[in-house]
Amino acid sequence: MPDAALLALPEKVLQFGTGVLLRGLPDYLIDKANRQGIFNGRIVVVKSTDGGDITAFDRQDGLYTLCIRGIEDGRTVEENVVSSAISRVLSAKSQWAEVMKCAANSELTVVVSNTTEVGIQLVSDDIRQNPPVSFPGKLLAFLYARYQAFGGDKTKGLVIVPTELISENGTKLEGILLELAHRNGLEADFLEWLESANRCCNSLVDRIVPGRPDTGTYNALTEELGYEDELLTISECFRLWAIEGDAHVREVLSFAQVDEGVIIQPDINEFREIKLRLLNGTHTLSCGLAYLSGFETVRSAMEDDTTAAFISNLMLHDLLPGIPYPVDQARAQRFGTQVLDRFRNPYIDHRWLSITMNYSAKMQMRNVPTLLHYYQQHGAVPQYFSLGFAAYLLFMRGVHEENGTWYGSTGSEAYPIQDDKAGYFADLWNRLEPTELTQTVLHSHALWGHDLTQLPGFAQQVAANLQQMLAQGVSATVAAALTEKVSLEK
Image (cartoon, rainbow, N blue to C red; front, side, top):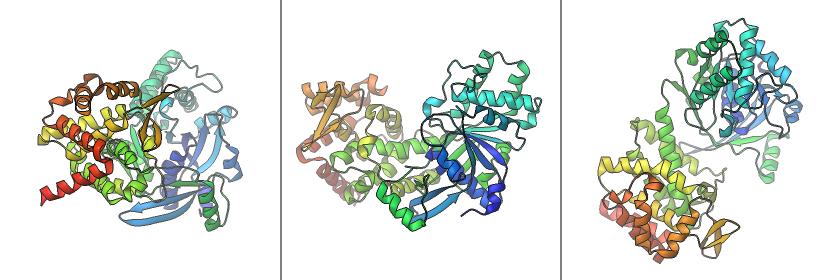
């Protein structure tokens, strides 16, 4: 429980968004720092949308319980923290004047946001509306009010850290703010203050925060805690917040000192690449294979020795050496090990079928660059990658269409193929034998941006895996491949 003194700390952070990711990562880290006498500031939250119930924050004085559950370095973690980082939550729609008063708060130093990926977009917006329509419009109106309140004092600029899951999120937000300032006819002195006194930092967040648990889990936690919490939130124990910044940013974001999961450095592309290739890439190359092997969730697949061995070997033997960016190998290896712990988390059910959404686009973005780089480095077929790719082709075999959605079949179960290329693959499966289908798909420049049949042995290995999956099943094919690999290594 928080000490009463923590509730009297000044508001230093303006946060756009009340979502569980913000509560489970930035807000958690600020609360952790406050408890150690570092940063010493609370968060005033702006709720931009009409949905949800913000009165729960009022009823609980901004307090909420974060139940941290997972596996870290092989040990089970169960920790409950009552966070006191949030001082109050304001509605942009009904309390915009109150939000704007915060612009004159001399203690304010930081802006954090998570408004979903569509939040950082340029729309025609009048910052004099109450409130402006878009998140960038609201932020620009706030910054302009701050500029006016302090007469353009450059020491009153803010460090702005968007956490939306888009590449170069800080750079894009800054560009939109400048364009909106021009469109709103704001004076040149303000434009100069906006650019020189404020920092928009690119950042990358990584923590699974499913949010409020199901009724059974909530009731069990309520009994364990001894109180009810309308805002109770579950998160995994892994956390990463990588922020692009210099010494000034590090000084302002002093809460980074208290947790090794916060990293502030001039370039965070390494972290983006490691996450994209090892976490997201492994998900993409495993989802079809695991689902067709009969596993509904990531956790259940990790409880099977064969599938768990495939996932581990895929990540550490094929994807790690193929990362198409110079990375610290020890850091990448450590991240990979942590990812495997996260996949085994007994408290989180991540469904494979959800991961198959936009399967083809994910394969192209996350995995094809890794495949090409692996060949540049090794000139050989990445065996586990070829198994995952064969399972992708098999998963994309649509057998019937209903209301514009193609469905595949595994045993007696039908599953939706949530991919804009589903019709293309249904047509190929209807016309071609597996070997010709494999050649056609891998040859497609439109799909991959490259002719993957030019990679020596890759098309042949994928086709052989696909044939074996059709004849013997996916699980048996993976088991046989793992046995053969072990025999060759001996």
